[in-house]
Length: 423
Image (cartoon, rainbow, N blue to C red):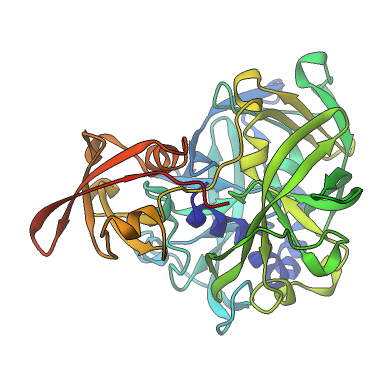
């Protein structure tokens, strides 16, 4: 997993503290604000999605005219537009400003509220919806996912429907709760509790190296790209002996710093995965930003774990179900082995620029530098690749030979190196 994937982990958590009181007002008008299927006799709808940097991205139509790309996030209380230029383009009228305090070490971010919009996802429609528009595109999601990303939403779908995310077929199924029946095809059932609009579970057990199995209370976070995030101060799980210091990404209020290491195993019922990558964010830049209501949260499970399953959320009956995907469940958990961090820019996000080269990494010793534009990767034109493709290539197999043609100051240059497992 590329280090920049990790920054997605803050999406859900950073938004909740400042916006929750606003979303609660919407709950009092459930009839007006709830999402519903277009046809009264319709039991369910199936919506295609795409996965970028481990995250589920679906098409959302706003006001019957603008089709936008949104990240599906289990715990986001409101509908967020992360691109402030959209507010100008769509000529929104703002009724209120709010301050958002999230992960990072910088000042709070300002956002604007606009009301009374129609939002449609497939056959699901929400009328009179309120949108929260960030005043600055601080997350730069499009650059690090390689496609235009316009916003984040999710809680209203999970709250109104039984939601099944099938990573094998790239299909999202939304079913009326009173029409849903859990079957064997959905996998094993595990209890969840929805608190502050976030699904928690006590069903996970972690074994660190040279220690006993420890139960943990985790948020199930579809807005996070990591496999496992642990708040070291809230668990009995120590920082692993072998870790790398890393910039885990950027939150709403600045950079997120911490460590990346591994735990021996992560178990949920009869499902057990070995050598799982875990992120340990610094308390200064991350954990201290959460409200008191989050104090019993010991960490979170993200999509690097969830993508190995068919996942069903049933908030109304208080459970989630996991069905392993045979091909994906056998995949190991891997970190970038090149030392490169890359962003996508330009038309259609097909220009790939190196944003960071880790010291003492294979790419570092091959002479690559920040600002290099990659043109070919292993003889494949970068225009034929996505950020997700690049991440897979650079984390695939230790010892794999990588050949890069890149442009630096107008000159075409070449670098070659072998991937090396860093953690």
